[in-house]
Structure formats: structure tokens, C-alpha cells
Image (tube, rainbow, N blue to C red):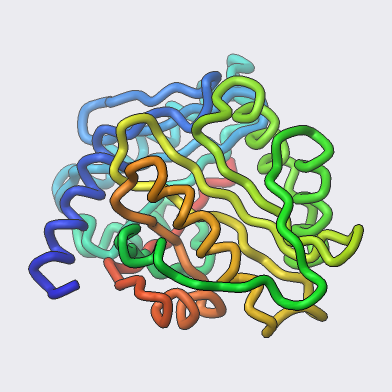
Length: 269
């Protein structure tokens, strides 16, 4: 995309996915509280500030308000802990918002690159599974367990919140999730999901980690192509990814463009 198109897509992303965000699951809620939009997820957590409209005069007070708010929710037992994430994008204001979050006690997780790709371009990708690999679409708890096994070996950690998210979506909103596992025989070696909100022009790609011995065989590309074709069938216009430095080069070769950089700042309570 040319630079002007990218700016328009970024503005649409900010509007649809942040300012007017829908809850991730049926038990979550999105609140618009003055200068911020935040999501509250009871049970497994995942609380987050999705968007803010701040300046150098208001930022510190609003940061303190959010800390107090989530601390109070935890004290009342509405969420398991006061921990929450402030999802900061490089074009958010004020320009020193990250420094202000750090000064307030937030801890930065590794930066990721926000990438976007046009579905009409990506859905034409012709990718054959590597020899010995088949794809299994996740539709039940057994499939979710295979996903978690692939993630555990790919990322080196269990992801209980992702498991809860998947089970909730498959039970309550199956049309909003497309998850797939790459299988080598009976062994899951990679897994990924796509989250789709009703009426949104954007779908988010998540996961995609591959176990070490199967990296470099094109499985990540295969999972992207599969989800792009599903998105095309649903009439979705864009795929969005918060990419690590491992996946960014692959996605750019597939036709994704950079919209910016995002850093998760976490208040640990």
C-alpha cells in the first residue's frame, strides 16, 4: 500500500478496533470512560486499556485513575487480580506516554510490529502443506488441547488464558474464531487462530508458533494462507498482526505492510 493508504487504514484501525472496540468474549465488557476505552474480562483476566486520548496535561491523572479502577475491581472480587495491560501504539499521544507509564510502575513487554494485509491479496497465496503435515480445524475441546500442546512446545510455556478464551468462543461465539493446528501424524507442531468481530473490516491473526524441529518448512506461511482464505469467504477486508521479529519478515514477504509499533505496558498490581 502507498503511504496515504496506510494512514487511512491506520485511522480506520484506531476507530474500529480501539475506540469502538467490541468485547473479545461474551463474558467481557468494554467501557468508554472519559479519555480511555478499556476491556474488563472476569475470571481469567485479560484486562486492558485499548485506546486513550491524552495530552501532557491529562496523562498522569488518567493513568492513576486506571490503576485505581482495576485495583478496586480486584478488591471487590470482580477480576482475579489488579493486573492489566495498557496497549500503547507508537502514534498515541502524548509522545512520552510510555515514559509516563514506566514512571507510574508499569513494566514494558517486548515491542511488536503492527502489520496489516489486504485479504484480497493474501487469499490468492498458493501454499501446499509440507510433506508429512496436515491441517486440523479446531472445533472442540480436544482440538483446543492440541493447540495448547503445540503452543507449549513452541513458546516454552502454558497459556491457560488462551485456552479459556478458545473454549469460551467455541461455546458461545463459534463464528468469531477460526483456529487450526498443523499435525505431523498425531503430533501437533504448530497452531494459530484468527479472531473476527461481527461487522468489522479487520480480523486479528494470533499464535502461529511452530515447534523448533519443524521451523523453516513453511508451516507459518501455510497457517496464514489458510486463515486468509477463510477471511475472504467472510468478506473481511484486512488481516492484522502484532508481529514479533521472527514473524515480521515472513509476513512482509507475503504482502503485509507496517502500520506502526505497539508495546504492551503491564501494571502488575
